[in-house]
Amino acid sequence: MSAPDPRPVVELDHLDVRLAGRPILQDLSVSIAGRSIGLLGPNGAGKTTLLHTLLGFFPVASGSARLLGMDVRTETRAIRQAVGYMPENEAFVGGLNAVRTVRLLAELSGLPPEAAMERAHESLFYVGLGEMRYRRVETFSTGNRQRVKLAQAIVHSPGLVILDEPTNGLDPPARQRMIRLIREIRDSGHVRLILSSHLLRDVEECCDEVLVLKRGRIAAYCNLEEERRANRRFLDLELHGDHEGFAAELSRLGCDWAASGRSRLKVVLGPDVTTRDLYRVAAERDVHIRRLDHKRDSLEDIFLRAMEDEPRGGV
Amino acid sequence: MAVYERTYRPYAGPTTAERTRFLVIPRYGLRSVLASRLITLFFAASFLPSLVGMILIYLAHNATLLATIGIDVSGIELIGPAFFARILTIQGLGLGFVLMMIVGPGLISADVGHNALPLYFARPFSRFEYVAGKITVLAVLLSAVTWVPGLLMWGLKAVLAGPTWTFQNLRSALAIFVGSWVWIVVIGLVTLAISASARRKLTAMAYLFAVFVLMPVLGTMLIEGLGLRIGWMLHLMAMVRRTWEALFGIEPSVDASLSVAWITLIVACAVSIAVLARKVRAYEIFR
Image (tube, rainbow over all chains, first blue to last red; front, side, top):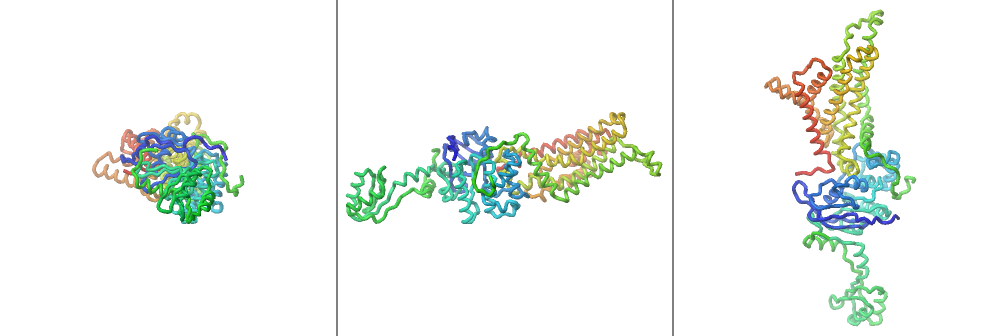
């Protein structure tokens, strides 16, 4: 695995985007350096507009936006050289088979014809279309067309792959295959990801950081990796017996706790405390632990909170 | 790496020069076009008028020899600007136009219809390069049926007729070359603009037919019915012909001034470029 690129993937500074006179994105400010970034939001939140702005398809009205440290206004060509893009809607070059489609697009990214041909075959095998690569893309199912789009997005070996609703229109097995592929690409260590979706599970399974958009503004930002780490030590206990004595013993061990109801405790474990210690203390105090949950703020909780709250201007 | 080894690996090889990258489009485009036997046959048939022209030139220069075997070719002795203009008209405005009707409409409409433009423009490849690549497809095909055979024909005549004729008729060679490019640029831009405005090839064909066939009919009605000479501006082919006749220095067959002809062609190109600038983009912004 190569050394991680220290540059932030996305840097937005009071970014405003207006299309046909209407404000679509307003006052977005954020800097994200994660390996895989999720863009979440309901339909119409501005996810795709943000991606298109980062790719230079839509103009910046005010503020600034940088992708991999490059200004989207002045360094569009360099950005497009470094990025692979899988669009949301169905998109393919008519009349060509899968190999020729991917090869053509690789050549447009600057690969010489022979290398483009080799990479096209490799990419199609990689996404699982090896046996179908000489079929015209028009004849493919939705799932296979999605995979051709993924193959063309990675064929030129970009440093960042932008995936816009990659599981759109896929049945559950096809969705699972697509998610597995995306995770493989992410775990290869060569590529960073931006994944836009309105499906929480897609984002949760593939991303480390999540930006939630709502009505063109940032509604929440969350580092899922840190959340997962933090929540690993957060327990929800249901007890029977001397729960006050049990809690006092936990304090002595260095745990924070809070009572939530007559027989329930929320506990944040101390640095050297494990769940085994809790069972030991419970046995010493003759307390029965009836239930023990590793409580975590799920992405769904975070998303729902963000949808209820008033949007924030920046993170 | 063997293709069956399913791992992702980065590419670390050389890349091609950015300034020549647009040539990828005509390479793929021409291969697709010539994959059709019908188009290839028609394309080959487009050379027939030039071939006939060359035979006539040859016969005209061997009149004495042919007379000895009883063939009189005295009627084809006058090979000059009008002769070349006539062959160019048949090849360019006739067969070349039909070729454009077959090939041109699908060039951009296929990409628009299949939503392929974001795939092109998400790469280090500009809209200008895309249009340049597409127009190159048309330019190669039209060149092959206009100025290339035209200049070959002129060259044959020059070889057979000698330096005096050659120097006296340099203007014809220039007219063949410049006239052909005027037509290539005009029909290329108009065809691409129409192709970019439609999502289906058949629709684009219908638009092209309307611009080059129905609009001239309307123009003729305006000129002859209402006496409005502005009707000439709806007759693109006639205006191209008017410029050719001026370039060859022969009597105009069209009752329109040269300035009107040039203005019409320039306006057609400008409108086409404006349409292309609006339509050829990754995503259209709807108001």
